[in-house]
Structures are given as C-alpha cells and as structure tokens.
Amino acid sequence: MSFSSKIKEELAEHFATARHCNLAELSAIVRLSGIFADKKNGGCALRVHMENFGVARKCFTLLRKTFNIGNDIVVRRNMATGNCSYFLYAKGEELLAVRNAMTQSVCCKRAYIRGAFLAAGSVSDPSKSYHFEIVCDKEEQAEHLKDMINSFGMDAKIVKRKKMYVVYLKEGSQIVDILNVMEAHVSLMELENVRIMKEMRNSVNRKVNCETANINKTVSAAVRQLEDIAYIRDTLGFDKLPEGLKDVALTRLTYPEATLKELGRLMENPVGKSGVNHRLRKLSELAEKLRDQ
Image (tube, rainbow, N blue to C red; front, side, top):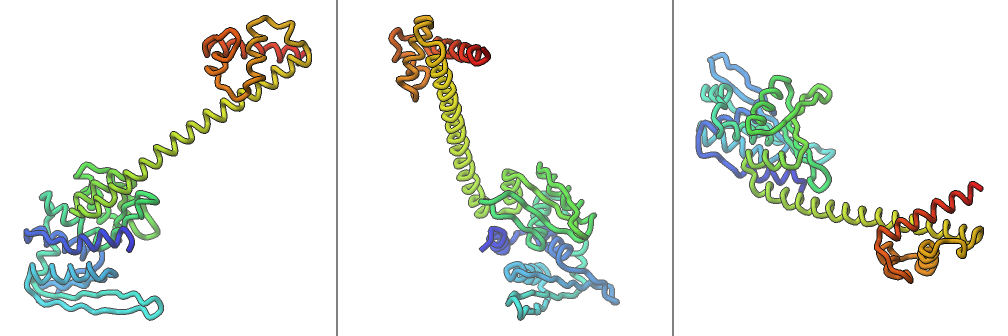
C-alpha cells in the first residue's frame, strides 16, 4: 500500500464530532471531486466521483450522519485494469448547507483540508522524496486552499499542470505539519521515523565522504612529496641538503604512509606537525627549482 493510501485510510476513519466540521469536510470533497446541481424546487443535488473505497464510504457516512438522508453509490469496474470507480448521488434541500459551508474556524479549516486531501490529494513515498499535493480544477479553488493551508504557518505554493492547479508542499517538516493539521497522527509518526532514518544515513554519508576526501588529500600529498624527494635524491643528492630537510626526506621515504604528526615523531630529531609541513614545503620548492633548471 502506498503512503498516500495509508494516509487516506487513516483519515477515512476519522470523524469530527461537530456538525459544522462535517459540513466543511463534505464541502471540500464535493468541490474537488464532484459537482453541485440546483433542483427546480429550490433544492440541491450532488454527484461525487471517487477512486478510493474508503473515501467513498466516508462520504456516504458523512451524508447519512449529518443529514439523515438517503444516498446512492454506483460502482463501476474497469475491465482492463480491474480498478473500481465509485459514484455517489444525493439530493435534498439540506444539501445547500454543504454547498454554503463556512470555513472560518480553525477546526473547520482542518476538516476542509482533510476533505480536500481525501478527494484529490497525494503524498510521495517519504523514503524517496518529500512532496505533498492537492489537485484543483479551478484557480480560485487552489488559491482558497493555499491560503487555508498557509493560515497554519506553512508555505504552500501553486503550480499549473496542464489544465489543473496543484497546491503543493515540498519540505518534510511542512508535510509533517500538514498531517498534524489533518489529524493523521499515525501517518505523521511513520513519516517522522523515515525522516529520522534518512537524516542519520545522510549524516553518516557526509562523515564518510569527508573522511574519504581527507584520506585522498593526504595520499595525494604524500605521493607528491615522495616524487619531489626522489627527484632531489636523483639530481642533487641528500648530502647537499640542510640536516633538517635531509632528516624529513629520509623519514618520508622510509614511512611513505605516515601522517605529518607521525612523521614528526619518527624523525631522528622529532618535530611537531607544523615543522614537518614547513620542511616538506621547502623540499617541494627545491624540487620545482631543480626541474626548472
């Protein structure tokens, strides 16, 4: 089961206690995956199309609990893929309350965002990337939803994808926040666990890469030092070198893999790391002069 499906399964089992919150959630579901139609007698009818059985069941239950009216579900199966589509139909003057639902209070905003996600939302697999989105048919729907999400301190943005408008979040921390807003607490904990593991792996990889780079740098420097020292030995000879340079040159040839600190301790007249580095730099400069000549 995908991470999106797990979230929707969790949210499909969550029911608000307040009627106004149920109206807000129903309003979002119908606006993003259905249509309202006016009846001649002044009433209202709605038709909702859903691909997820849990969402269809929740919409059916919300209508029954909120209005105590009958509604029908038609199931259509795609013979090629085996996937089912669910069409829910309801009518009655009471449904005008869904159409005109207010979302001013914080609890109703939570419910509306929850309904919008159930109707047209998705979240990428957090082990691969962080991406949350809700697809809207109309730009004003997307703007309304973006403003509602951002009222909780997030930074949702809109991108146009073909004829659709997509409200999205890209940061893992903000996806955690939006799951909290929708009250998908089980999915939130799963996402946090994935984020912790990813951060640990990234931290370990950074340290390993840093250590590898340092090792490569040390090895490359040692190889250049050996080449310079060998060139001085074969052209000028060590006997013409000052005692300090001769000491470090012979020690480096004897211990090619030693670090500067180890090299300083191994010399006939031990010196510190900076002293070794200074003498090796002098040898390098001498080798360059000899090559130029």
